[in-house]
Length: 247
Ligand SMILES: [Zn+2]
Image (cartoon, rainbow, N blue to C red; front, side):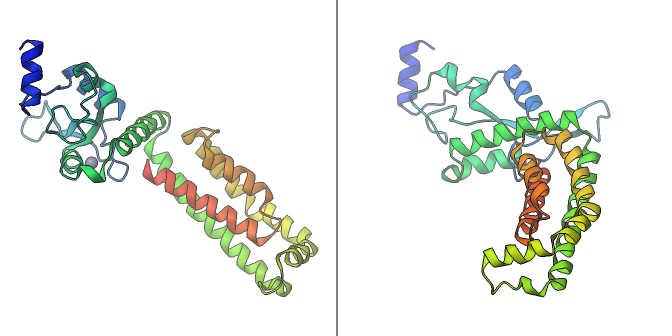
């Protein structure tokens, strides 16, 4: 088709589509770790075929962030065909999610799809650095550390009646310090080793500069000071748990 004919065809809402090459599709799938990039889905997009024991079924699709043709969802007329079919304009999804993002395009703007893609690729980097089993064990460790911390917090609060929440924060903190040495020692003995262990493994999976790691590190060092810090530390553990669960 000549350039002018292609333009006419596009103006008339024709069927011209700027499809991805086979190479681009393969690369998108591999970069997402052969999982759907939708952060709430993340299902595998490949599985062994039952009938032909030498083959695998592809359950994924290279979806366009901006549509391949003028009538498609999120179409951007200012893009060139080259840009439209480039890997930058693709996101790897399972067939269900690929269908949903096009049927309900207003709920899935390009920004959302780009965030999915970015997180899915970062997840594939992390998965390549740690076994899945390791993440599962870590999730259990985090739940245990958080429960220990909360019950520690409640037990000490019962032992320190002056810690009532009816008195001002500054007085509460002062009272808290009066009891501090016993509680600090108990915290170092009973709680900190669990959080330290969680941090060692979590750093290996997420990298030591991940915000959730940095937050937990700084909070766990200060948590023995008072109950507010301890509850904040429990919140950081919960946050780390959510991040790892979404991977
Ligand atoms: Zn999906």
